[in-house]
Image (cartoon, rainbow, N blue to C red; front, side, top):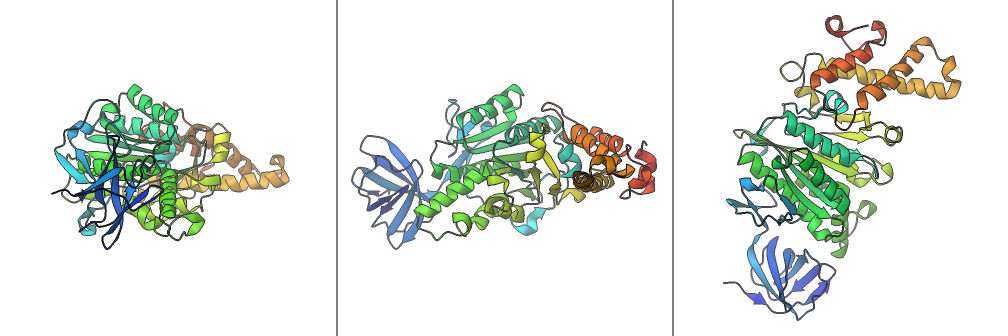
Length: 455
């Protein structure tokens, strides 16, 4: 029997309080029926005896103490799921936003997910080809990994996300799917994502969850949970390899901060709640593979660093939880390099186990080591040239500067539509290294050099 509560006791921002609730449950969903015939959705976020605090997803505008009848469902938020979600667009709460009607569910799953037993996890090993040389060669994405992109305001992270989705989908098998979650994006950005996926003919493999900038911030908190629930269904029920792209995690974290402030919680660094680390971990740790299951969930969270500050709490905590990061450079971006991947601070901690013979090519790891070591020397040569002038540099330093310019313009830089195979990427790396004397290549053994060095 569903009991309706006729009055609210308090309203504070997006929170509403009800007294006299028997046996409430944390995360329990509630429906508010207003006198004008409309409804609002909420969930239980705080319980004090029989006093319950609800978080109203659509906000409390237009709600008074006496014009809403509230009923609690007795269960947490569940997402309707079936194979027909592929090719569909949903709002931040998983409601259809493409005008194609409701999903007829085969199952309904709790959006908070089910914890994966660490013993049943399978170690990620298989390489995912993105077609982008700076990622495939130097910060390789591995199936089942969580590899964030650290960007800055106004940089081309949206274009990079679309390119990764388009090219990863084309390169992989029919068992590949994309779950795309956008949080706090503007209407034109949302339309850009939709039109890009449609024009690339990959929309039939994409599930989109869009939370716009003018949507309630409370809905923004649920968006990645809905997206990951859909990804887990596609991966572990339907056996698909799912790539989850979530942008922008900074908008998500700011929504958590605003919600925390409305609850009167004591803030931590830069006003974010002290539980931000565990909150982000509850999302990122939903990536991975399970023994005995065919599918996998791979995550690429994208976040913009306020003032390009990599020590800001959101990128800082994300770096602790995830297995590496891809960092975008403001200098490369302003220099017309796309994608502006700064290869030296970028890394993939699982790269060593998913490349080499049997996965990519035997020379992949030594080539990556040599490219990074040589590019680091280029930075030293640039710093020296800024002090004494380029003309005063030694011959080897001048060769390094020539290599550095070619590396940025030919290897890192590639067009938005260019999809390089891993073989093309590795061959290009050897062409660039062959600009240098063989004696300078101290990170590669002679057997590999004899086979691939072209100098």
